[in-house]
Image (cartoon, rainbow, N blue to C red):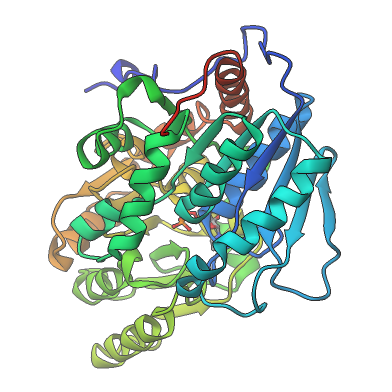
Length: 425
Ligand code: UDP
């Protein structure tokens, strides 16, 4: 397939058409379990935080006030923090600060009540909930305030269970209930649309595609030599992993692929930190693998980095690895593409929408480290192909922007506000 033949129509909204905001002025964005104030790449903070921060900032530029409700996890943060003009993060106390994610279902009701107290005084036109926990809160608040509810799930319990990361039945039941009453469910691309349909039976009219964007003022191509110099990295092949260290992200496969690579001088740079209840165990397993293969000098761990420093890592790398077991979109793959670095990713979930196999990177459809290693070697051993893929990746990434996503989202919210709400009662 030629690059130009690829259908781009799934990208929502267009910048050319005038924005119809339907009088939407303020929305409540629910992000109970993680805050855009947190550094992404460790703990429970990752793509969702970036999505919320970037989407709300772009909506605010279009005149929509965004109140982002999070659970307070730090006694020192003020209750309300303005992170961009028109975007306020509002911290609601619900339970002890240091709760684990698995403890959060027990405090959802308390948190919801705290958000409701604010909504009494800061009325909103629409609620946009992120992840199933906030979906549960959003469902309650929708009924209480009679406003439309849109949900972005980011990950889906049944999809995770299907790929081997079993999720509790309570979560899946809760997702069913939220979906049953959501006025719109946002999907990141065609693959997630299919998952919502086949795993949850969501009718197509209620699914809206909102393709995540990438900040192309930051994530741009640049000199690999200079990037390596800035990071103190040498003239060897560099594989890069960026993200949270948890089993789902498949770093075990990345390390096994490094061990199996023909490029015995290649290095694997891992930017990020342990995440979730089992993150430390996963990290321990990786260290054991590294020692077993005697890779200590070839794997470099880097603590989580803020977004403005990440482009240097992408530019330094020959290949970015995204070996996830499941992935709803995979912002990292798009950021690498925007920096002109081809991606070798597993052929799962949103990565199928995000990476064009053989054009902007390679998709690997087996969880076999030898196949992964072979894909990586094919790129490293053919710098010309690698370069061409990098160039195609930059062109592809240029079609994604948070401004386009924000315009599309606002038009969806306007439509929801002008019609009768979905009812589950
Ligand atoms: N990230 C970051 N610093 C890090 C590691 C990751 O800012 O040290 C960001 C990364 O740039 C990306 C997000 O975290 O924007 C991860 O999103 P992705 O969709 O790839 O994975 P998720 O966290 O949603 O599973």
